[in-house]
Image (cartoon, rainbow, N blue to C red; front, side):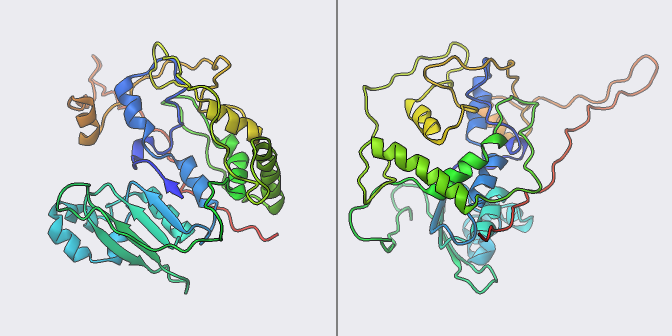
Length: 328
């Protein structure tokens, strides 16, 4: 399983608005596009405990250093110490996934150093073997080989996973494309995991699609190869990220879903209000924007001598709540 993206607190509960926006600040959307969203974490967590053999992520799960040689890591990377003491090293979103999925293996990058840990989940089950590797440079620990058992004999096929397809169908209504300051649709406090019937329905849809593309009987969910001439999407005048993809069209059609955060190839997209750039609040943002973050103006004093308070912050949402397993 892949958990792509970088943790950014201010973007975590935003929509995936970057492709649907008519006008954007390119510097802003390029940063926002690779920041992980709450709905993506919720979807992945629905896979359930120990249903995933390996997770590959960019960010480390937050707090994973406590399960390895944290003292040695602090000696090699002294600038990590403050974050380690605050329990702020790594991604809180990936910490949620680590505790929810409890995979056999977890591989990460991002912090540019080799680090291994054995995460005991305290439930008597198998621990998670965590491994992060260094940058691909001379005399750096960037490569390690592991042995993985093959799940079955015969050729290795790239296949759709029926449970994941069912999750995508069931959570499609949680997607939104409105730009900031709009927030993503809230994650429901009560949400049922896909049932056996949901998974069977998703499997039937995928098998029908794959059979038409020539999938053999022994691999009914084999992902069909891309056919047709090379696709060169036209560039949008005001949003260079707004590119359609025929594979996305075919995938959504297979599942019976509409475009929400993506753009169809053959139809005009629904217009979206102009997208205003988000204000930078960290040095990380400022570095990408090649400019210092804008100063926060002090409260202004009117002629009456009454100070105008700053605008209120958006309401905070509750923590991500995962549904219990379905026994059916």
